[in-house]
Image (cartoon, rainbow, N blue to C red; front, side):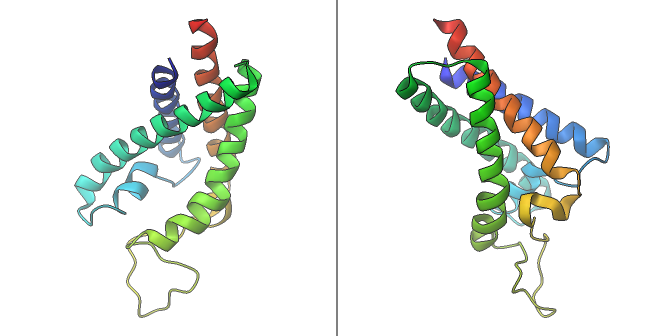
Length: 156
């Protein structure tokens, strides 16, 4: 059930982020951001980025499951709290620090005018993609955690 919840949670998270982008609440295109770490082909980048995002969603769902098992409960509010922590980790360490270090087409704070980058670095909580990006991202991650918890609770 954790994997089913992870799939549904990732579907929600991805849909919320895509919708927020279409409504101009954020400029972040997470599948493109992830996909361009794999390929320079802009068309393939989106497809590979969606695939990478869903794979990572499954990996994180297994981690959530381990936490729920260790605590002996999977309340929706606990899933929401895990989602908040996950969103904060993603916006501070994952996309702000680690991704620019390994992404071959992303600028960094030490990039200069002679460096050609396909993407600007996201910045703290991905604020470089819009001031509302942190709120949208946290909201989406809270939904992700809540859905995983609900799937596990329904499986009992």
